[in-house]
Length: 372
Image 1 (spheres, rainbow, N blue to C red):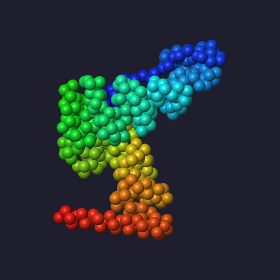
Image 2: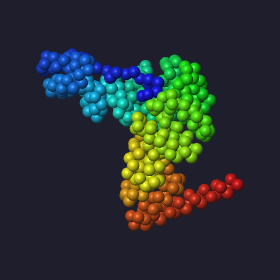
Image 3: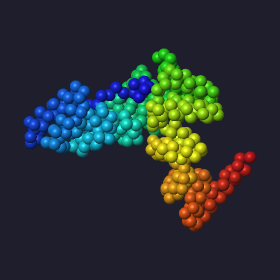
Image 4: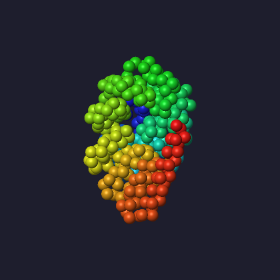
């Protein structure tokens, strides 16, 4: 992460004596692999761990260390496979589970990291670094209430830790708790001017729909730290609200240049590409947005609409049926679903959707009359 250092975690290397047939050969190879790994020779370490595991395939320590070597080379899927193998052999190892979570986190898969991190902090309530990584995963996936519930009761544990202050302050502002969030903004500013402080102020102004003030704060944030996660994306939001479409698109693209899994940037660029009929690009952005936040209705609606627009009607129907199940009063989704049913010659289903649309519209009109 490029903001306050959320964690300073090195993947935990595990050393333990061998306890099996051919233990002497295994031990010799294991010790050599560990030496190579600690000396930075990841390729040599990988080959040597593999040789050791050919003797004792289910040794959790060797599997975990092999996973760490793969992760150091950026081969996250290979690393994850080794960590999962290690956990099959030793399901209670918090060190291995934390390594697995970090591999998901570093490979921009926060949704997969979250359940592993929750198990780590459940087993070890004092695991400060795991709390911060879990909080950042919540932040990335839009689970702000969960972040507040996780960190707010642990203020004494973290004290003046700026990563803690930044994460909690951001979540409070995003949930609309401006008064409480401002306390954390003040703490950040108290440590000196920083991009993080201006980012928090920008979030507060966005929450109040004060877009000119948000633009000013967020512009300052990206100038102070051009690689601060979410800063360009939020800056793009403020520009979009002010009608500066081209500048907003540039800001969203700049966010994705180094933070490819930013939800807002993917969502907005997907919507923009869809509106100018750049369908392949739109699909890439919107698929990523729904992967990051699978429950977000806006992202799901846009992707379903895109599928309908590009003739993938069966896929659109599946998506829209799931959407109206989760949000039965969403008229727009029922309209699109009726359209899709008609294209598939499913007349009875289309008529049922039309009846639902008529009912929802009548209820909305009745509410309007009652409110006037």
